[in-house]
Each structure stands twice: as structure tokens, then as C-alpha cells.
Amino acid sequence: MKCSVTFRHMKPSDAVRQYAEERVDKVTRLIDREVEAQVILSLESHLHVAHIELVTDGSLRIRGLDKSSDMYASIDSAVDRILRQVKRYRSKIRNHRESGANGRELPHRVFSVDELEPETKTPQIVRQETVIARSMTVDDAVMQMDLMDTDFLVFTNAESQQVNVVYRLPDGQYGLIEAHAPRERHRSIRAVRETGRQSLGSLAAKGVSSGRCASRTSWPKNG
Image (cartoon, rainbow, N blue to C red):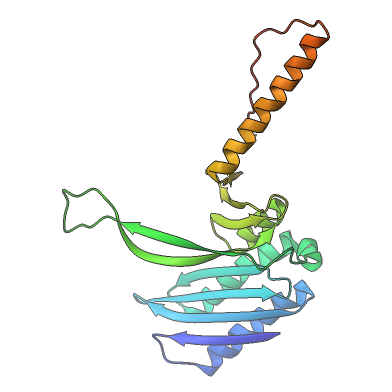
């Protein structure tokens, strides 16, 4: 295991560094594959923040973050978060293999309302990040989102090669957004319509009367 410990806005401590490395090492042994660990320990508004991220040789990222009044406690809580996810997906993590290419780079923008101009309701761009939409299955995307302890994940669907977003719902279930280019959608609609005309023509040729019909695709309800 490769482990780097970085201190920010606080004085480095060999004792804290060793403690973090020992705690992380116990978790990586459960994964049973090559892992690189990055630990960032910082002081923010009198709170000790521990941010731990593990990256496996299959490009899975496992993240734990916690803050408290004590750095040792923050490290423990962050490691415990990772440990729970590792135990939950232990077999999948061991057998996971990265699928397809490395993924696409997509811009990610964060908006904020300018408080200095209350009459203006239009949000302003305050930060822009690049998101790597890695190629993976929907199931792997859900697992990766859980392992990163986040509420959404942008990825490239390994089956459709389209950019998708999986996200967490308030009730604990998951949602999936599938993005399609307008032209592709129009081509799909035309193809469906043409298929429908051919089917109706075939029925008419057989002397079968067809009434007005409607097709609807609905999402299965959660629960």
C-alpha cells in the first residue's frame, strides 16, 4: 500500500501521521488488491478534518470524510465510513475491473447568488471543475457513488456509451438520468414512427383492422 499524509493549516505531527497510516492499512488489507491512499488532515474553524481517499488498481475510489474537535476522532470516523462501504461491497471491489476507456472530461459548474445585488436573481458561476465520466455499468456507478460517499456520479454508460448521472433519492433509493443528443433522439423517434407505419401496413395487408393505439414507457415505482 502506498499512503501519503498531508497536513494543511496545522503543524505536522509524526504521531498523528503514524496513527492515520496504521488505521488506513487495516482497511486496505480487507480489499486484497493494490491500493493507493491519500490522507489530508486539516484544521478548519477550530475543527479537525480528516479526508481519506483510497484508489484501487481497478480505478475504484473509496472516500471517507469527517470533522470533530479531535483529529484522532476524525480519523477514526473517516476510516469507519470507508470500512462500512468496503464490507458492503467487498466481493465486488475484489473482482472489479475497469471497463472501456478512461472516460470523458466534462465541465462541472457551481452557482451562487450574489448577495450584494438582492434584486438580481440570476445565479453567477463561482467555480468550474472538470468531471471525468469514466466508463462503467450502472451497477458499478451506484457502487462507486456509495464508496465515494457522495449523492451523485457522472459516468459514461458502458453499454450505451452515453453520459449518464446516477443520484441518490431522499428515501435512500437511486435515480438515473440518461443524456441523449437532440439529433439522436429525433432519429430514434423517426425510426420508431417508421417501424410503426410498417407494422400497420403489414396488418392492413393481412386484413386486420387497427384502431388508435398509444404506447407509453413508464418508470417502475420505487418501493
